[in-house]
Image 1 (cartoon, rainbow, N blue to C red):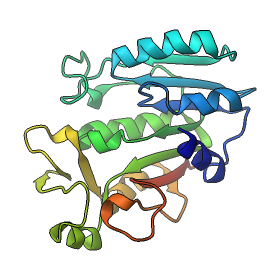
Image 2 (image 1 turned 30 degrees about the vertical axis):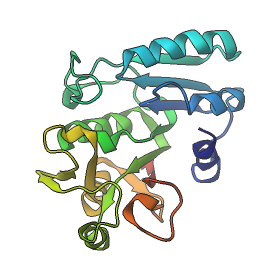
Image 3 (image 1 turned 30 degrees about the horizontal axis):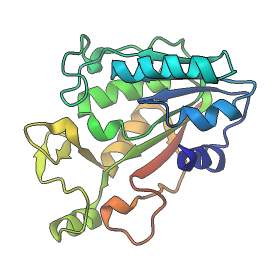
Image 4 (image 1 turned 135 degrees about the vertical axis):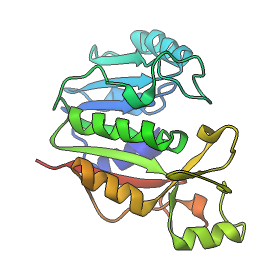
Length: 224
């Protein structure tokens, strides 16, 4: 949480008054540093693992003085994390108004989602962001260099199985780890009105010697 909090400040220029949406909040690791920073803003965390949301609701109600900290359960299907989910992620609409969010982030979320589901989330992110609002997302991004290092066994994980639109580590449980061609993600952002703030910050998973974090990080903003 502290690591990514630095990225929120240094890369995304997060301000204490802004409205933040944490998609895939888990047990609140990112919420912890934000709870002391968003003094005039607000935070909403949403996740498909209901017990994690219940824990956050109980814990942050006791310890977080900011009444504008909320956690929401999203009952969307995911073979790895919510196999009994009621809704298809590819059809899900987030319970937040259009153009209402200043900054949203997804840490290790699209790394567990297949293309149709992931694109619906991108649509929703663009809908919810204010013009100029920012989105920070982590990925496993593929390019020719990464594929070469993968063939040499230098990446962790490896993505040995090719599916339509992506590569996965485990064919029978594809959502366990999902990688996308960087060119595909760039096209997707362009299609939906997200402008990437260059450069992409690549991660150590791909065998690079120069990296920022473990996964690759893309920061983008909604075109006005």
